[in-house]
Structures are given as structure tokens and as C-alpha cells.
Amino acid sequence: MLSLYTNLMIRLRNDEKGATAVEYGIMVALIAVVIIIAVSTLGGTLTTLFEDVNTDIVTPPTATATSTP
Image 1 (cartoon, one colour):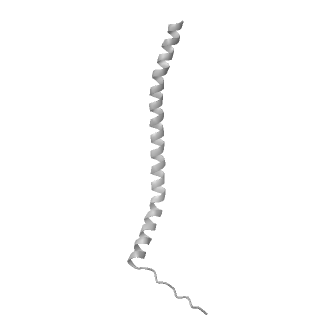
Image 2 (tube, rainbow, N blue to C red):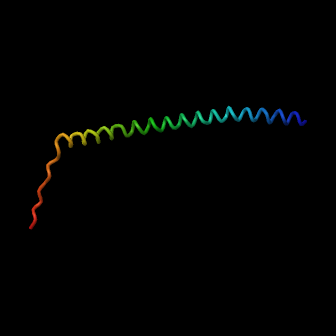
Image 3 (cartoon, rainbow, N blue to C red):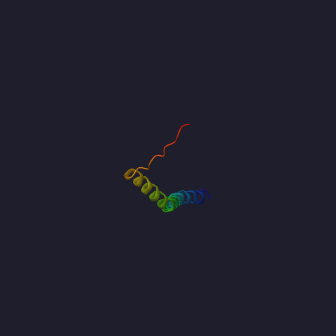
């Protein structure tokens, strides 16, 4: 009976290593998906922002004069 328990524990320990590798693989895949979604969502916004900054550097906006009473 003790040998059955020992064999079971050895098999469970070996299975944990495989399960841990699978869990890490799933986490890496989910992180990659989140990064891809974030880049694709913010990509257009960042492009517009940098284009606006570039335009302001090339042709600075004119300041409006305020009159003092």
C-alpha cells in the first residue's frame, strides 16, 4: 500500500512540472494578446498626437494678444 502511495506522489510531482509550464505558457499568451490589443487601440491616437506635435514644431501656433484695460 505504501508503494502505491509513493508511486502516486511521484507521478503527481512530475505532472506539476508539466502543468506549471502550461500555466506559464497561457500567461505569456494572454500578456501578448493584451499588448497587441493595447498597441492596436492606442496606435491611431499616438500617431495623431505625434503628427500634431510635429506640425506645431514646424509651424508654431500664433499667440493671441490680450488687451489690458
